[in-house]
Length: 505
Image 1 (tube, one colour):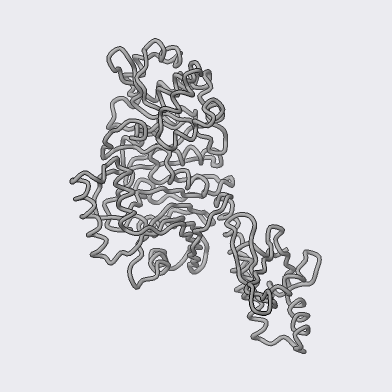
Image 2 (cartoon, rainbow, N blue to C red):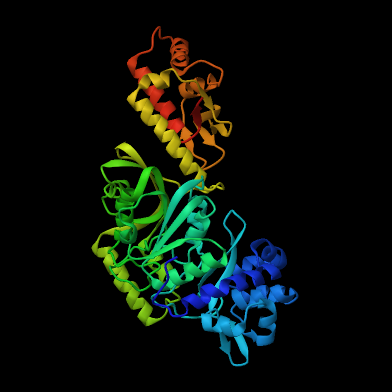
């Protein structure tokens, strides 16, 4: 496993991990036990409110000690910490950079928290943030598991694969997640401190992860991976680097453009990529066209999902507070002015954020870019895998329409029909009919009565599509299916297939 030569304590922290793992396991410092012990106070962690957590931890023995030490940043008596961390030697822990002495007490120098990524508890090491104790973040600050990281975890396909690349690994959380479904995981980062902590995180979880230092795809150029995951420094703004975990040094959405445009070069045939990205909304320009221009002309099936759009002022304020800056401070206000000036000069009127999914194909590039701003419960990872399966079937249909006409279709069991009526002078009048998908992204399609009638005849043991269309034409008084009628029917069905409301059987 490559090492971080820039940090002299790196071997010490990694070497400490077996004893540290023993201590955490013995005390029960895991995701489920913390939730049980903290109860309602667990939510206070996310609200940056230490008092409810501290009160709940007081009667939890050695586990309570670790909660206060590692999650709240409290300074605690050395004897108490030594008992909770046994068999870890405190002198070794201080030398390794895990702890720091504070007079007669001991404090955590790093954040260490349990996370269930889907394969049981994993422990994640990162730098301390300002959530529980005010502090200024340094340029090489290594972020812990934040909202963006969790969002990507839930949105990443986890079907078994051979090799995974985690681009810009940070504390290593995506790489740790990938180790549960991949035979080999490679993680890169430009920040040596990130690789130091990612190596320790891997050792703490007894996982073998290849770590390589370097910018973007350069350290692995020429290699191919079955899957790429990336939570790059996608923050949109001026071309500067104040914090490596968020700033790329590229202007506006240049970081997302770089990752989206080059990721396909490192995908094995049929390989997929799941990445977080951001893009600017420019006055007079369709954001879909902007993202489309980033992709190669050949070899990619792309699904781009926009989850949110922020106005520039809200965006800048959010990221300044993320860095622990007070928006009332004149220096912070000057930075906000500079940031907003950069947006204004580029005619930026919004910043979009979402997921970019890529699949390597042998054919011209295809792109579906759409909004998914409504709420949904199911994670997108499995949906992305199914999307690409449906997309491959639709490409086959495009090449041979007879395939669609000879196929039997079924309405997915999670699909429901909704009719909306509005009150009028003559009573209730039909306004609109919609098909709702009740799982996954919960897509909706407005449909007419012809489509409703067509879907009513779809069954796994029923008629193929063309025969259903023939019967439908007869029901509408047509002796034969016109080319226009057939094309409309096929267009509707393929659109419903793409979103999983209807499936070929």
